[in-house]
Length: 247
Ligand SMILES: [Zn+2]
Image (cartoon, rainbow, N blue to C red):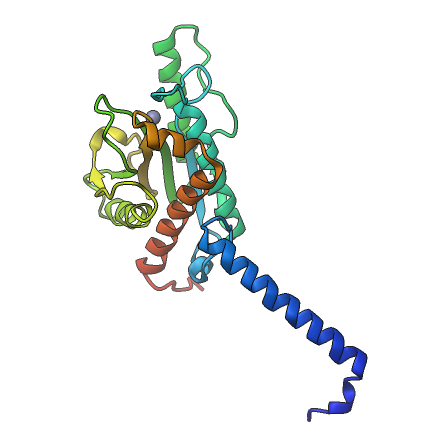
């Protein structure tokens, strides 16, 4: 039974204050959400609990990757966005394996080509050992035609799951990017074979386009891209199949 006299006046006042703070806080978060700069996790985030996500921030160390029209280095953009993606997944209860967390490569040779090979071999080995559910390789694009722009996601032509994941991430990135693109299959991107990991490569945008390069340097745009990647993975997993317990 509900006893009204259980609450004295002081308690009621403090409950009202707490509720008001919750409401004000909610409005504040909503307004931040509208600007797309919040890290709040969506309702489907439960599907991410316990999932293992491997994030491969492309290039690093002696290998800058693409160099932007105003000299932005791809390796830096890849790492910034990867770290933001990492945080979002960790907040949702996923286990994240980062193949690199700072500006480095994994080669030791003094010869550049050999060093690049060593780096790639290390990444493949680490990715395979991570036994992840999802593998995200994060890169930025560059092209001779400066007008090319927009993020684009790639999957291996033999992977139906890869296609579904890539399409889901692409849909979500299309809400952020300057140009809508379609997820594409591309064999040459994929270094991982004989694995159950669903793998995609995400090109977050074109550093050869001055406007997109400038956006990709900005923290709030990086965050919106990261959020779109996170949401794309989340809605892919939520749509995938009902989770059936093994026990
Ligand atoms: Zn790259």
